[in-house]
Image (cartoon, rainbow, N blue to C red; front, side, top):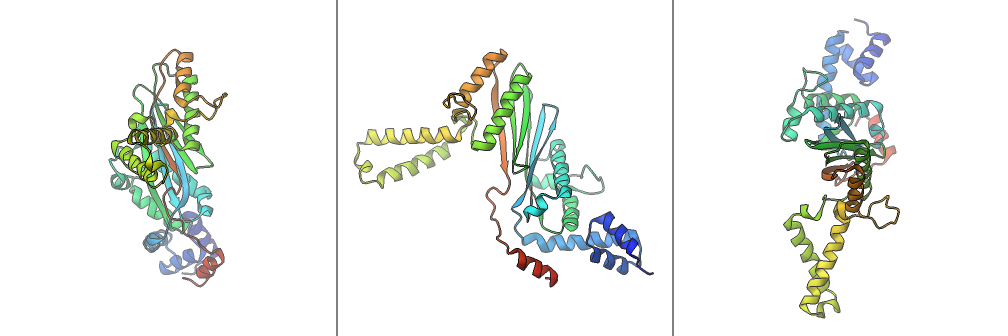
Amino acid sequence: MAITAAMVKELREMTGAGMMDCKKALNETNGDMEAAVEFLRKNGQAKAEKKANRIAAEGICRVAVDGDQVAAVVEVNSETDFVAKNADFQAYVEAVAAQALASDAADMDAFMAETWKEDASKTVADALTDKIAVIGEKLSIRRYAKLSAENGFVVSYVHGGGRIGVIVKAECANVCAEAKEACTNLAMQIAAMNPKYVSDADVDAEFLAHEKDIILAQIMNDPKESQKPEKVIEGMIKGRLNKELKEICLLDQVYVKAEDGKQTVGKYLEQVSKEIGATLTVKEFVRYETGEGLEKKEENFAEEVAKQMAGK
C-alpha cells in the first residue's frame, strides 16, 4: 500500500511521534493506522528502556487541590529545561498531580501500579512510558505527597513556574479568608526560606545529636575556643544550635513580610489568631524543589544535535 504524506501527518498528530518514525511504522504495518499506533507504542517502550540510564534533573512541580481539604504536590523530571517548558509535558504533570490527589497509594511503587485516571486501560507507569515515547527523552515521576485537613484547611503555592511547589496543612476553628491568606503567605515563606521543620519540637534527636557533635568539633579545632571551661563550651554549643534551629524551623524564622524585620512566623500566627478570634496552627508542610539533590548532566548542545543527526 502506498504511504501518503497525509497518512504520515495523521499518525504524527495521533501519536506525537517523529515524522520519520511515523513513516516507518506505516511501512511496517502496510498502512494500517491502528497497527502503526501499536508499532510506535512498542517502539516507544524500547526507547524508554534505552533512556533509563540518563539523568533527568530538570522538570517541574505541580500541585492539585480538592476544595480546601486535600492537597497534593508532585515533582516530575525531564532531561532538559526545554521539555520542562513544553505545554504537552506540563499538561501531563498536571494529570500526575490530579492522580496523586485521588491516590491512596502507600508508596511510589503502588502509585505507579495504579490505574491511570485518564485512561483505564493503562497504569500510571504505562502512561509514563507512552509519554516518554512521545516526548523523546527520559521522564521520571520522582515523588509526590498528599496532605488532608480534618480540622482546618490546606493551601498551596507554586513558585517560579513550577520550580518549587509547596502545600501547607493548618488547623483552625475559623476557616476564613484571613486565615487562608496568612497560610498562603507562609507557603511563600516556605518556598523562599526552605525550613526543614514546623517547630523545634519536630526536630528529631538524631539530628540534634549530629549537629552538636559538629559544633563541638568546630570548637575543639579552634585553638582559643577549645581552651575555654567546659560549662562555657556547653553554652556555646547550645547558643549555636539554637541559632541554627531558628533558620530551619518555620515558626522561629523571621517572617519575610514583617514590617519591623523582627517578627517571627510564630508571632505572626499569634497576631492573625487574635484578629480572627481562633487559634491558627501550621501542622505540616511539604516543599519540593525541582532537581533538588539530583546530579545535573552537563551537555554540549552542538554535540547532542550531532549525535542525533548521526542516529546515535
